[in-house]
Image (cartoon, rainbow, N blue to C red; front, side):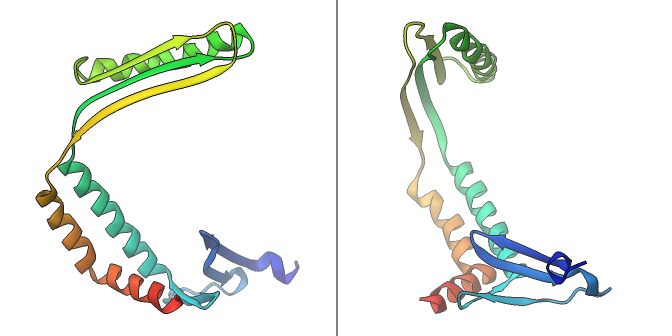
Length: 158
């Protein structure tokens, strides 16, 4: 077996995050820092940063309320049979959306165009949130130790 086939290489967004030699796996995994393009990457730090981002998104989504959403789709394919197949996929989805949400809040209309190929989308939505309610999640995010360490690493890169 060649030496290349014994290496495990993990890349995220084009950066080398983790490399290990499969032939030399050790019982106790230790913390490994890898460098790619002058950026030191630490797998645990990256995972902690991504957890903080997920928590920030979850907290921000809790502060946002959807007041209304309207979407009008005009769908057409070159062949009318294909248009029917596409509409057959859209209608169960729109039916589920309209059964879960009240019709005055969310409305989705799908209109077939049998004559030509086209996709025309008109969407309008209303969101409501208080700026003050975003202060706590943003403060929690930026004061998290892993986020601060990750941002320091990004700053060193520049």
